[in-house]
Image (cartoon, rainbow, N blue to C red; front, side):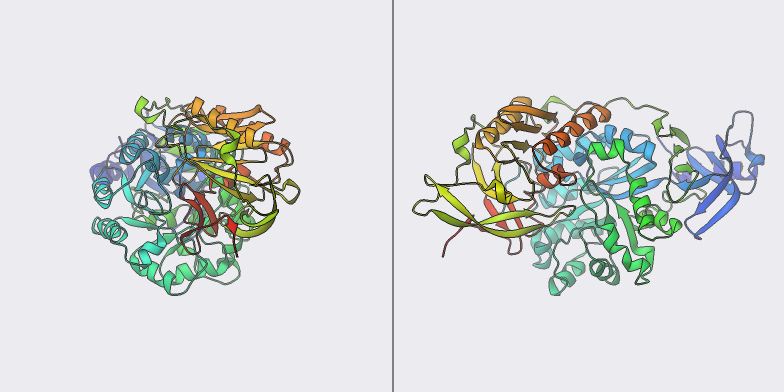
Length: 596
């Protein structure tokens, strides 16, 4: 357990003075100073008790017989990277496995919002993830989920968190604030629950996370900011980023597996000259394949630099800016005396190869591989077996009836590649034997939400466009933000039924069925959201899933992530829930078939 700075300060002073030897000294580095914006050559760093004791031109006086000495060989010394907003569950792995996957990419701090598991297991699930987070050798700080369910009245989650639950959890060790306030209409309307949660967070002097997913920057936006949320990651345009920063929020620019929102918004800095101090880089949602194969925050920083940011500025947005936002500047986000000794060694700031990773003064990764393994974390049995359909589904459960017409006009959820929002489309579809037919030629297939928490056997049906499936197939997932029922998307109803039934058999996961055959399966037994296998194993299975989707005609970038968000009834324009088809621009249920 890392001791507080206040308790280790005398020892750090002795090390800096040369009276006590350091535990670790890194010599001959190029110090990326995120405070001054400089790169300082010929810098040595001395570490003691997991914290930086000395950062200067020559740390020879801190070296003793027991000191480990590392030669940086003129490479850059970068603060450990911080992810300012993310959901571990989107990686399909436990917190431990997520950490194992991202540490070799230079991430040493994560601010996580476990509202996915909260929607299935409630406060019990949040406690499990918070306890696991504290067992790790990096900083995994937890925000209390604010909106469980995310949109009361428009969905039914597997659990609920009251304002009293939130107030209780805010007092737990390792809690850093309130998770993203997704019920933005509730904040603007002074909903008592939202007001109480924000007030409790502010009273605890913690940070209120934001989520303003509307393009409306008028009165509702200003009211939302006045309500208390301190950041927002839902912006997609340069105007969004500027508006948030001008109102005193931190604009969080995300690059996840399927959300590409950095390029447009970073122009606020590179073209409009906005001060970068209030911009933060984050990932929000990254699946295991991205983590293992492409990277994590190093990927985001590289991308931001490629969009025209100066390397030091991009690094500040993934280190110091994040730490300052959460009130953790005296602990994280810089290479400076007293801070936790989280440091990355790299030979190039633009391409950012992660060559060595230290956290709390310990070498955790070298050249893309873990140098210190972590034991797997075991979840209890009552966190599993959460998929309850109550019956076996049949193809007829996915029929949408429309009697008395040869053709009907229907509302269709339109998937937008690389963005979280959807489009509200309208299409004409034929009616055959009283049942509305899909139109594969026009890329209109069927979507269904199957209730899985209370064994009601209920199925809600609608239509979706954008996946491009070209043959009989169906994909089903128990990861269905945020209430996490089962989402099934398919071109063949028999395959849809088989896919949903298969997930009940395995206790949760993602499965691709085509012509009655199982092409890919990722088992997710923990709350139907996370695997209990190693991240590398899950990444291989997730890769097979992507291949299977492509075999069926889907070429969307990270189409699985798009699939998993189709029930997220707090992001416009159309979504599906256990209540029906939801118009998120009006926050009300709407009909699939349009009647005159």
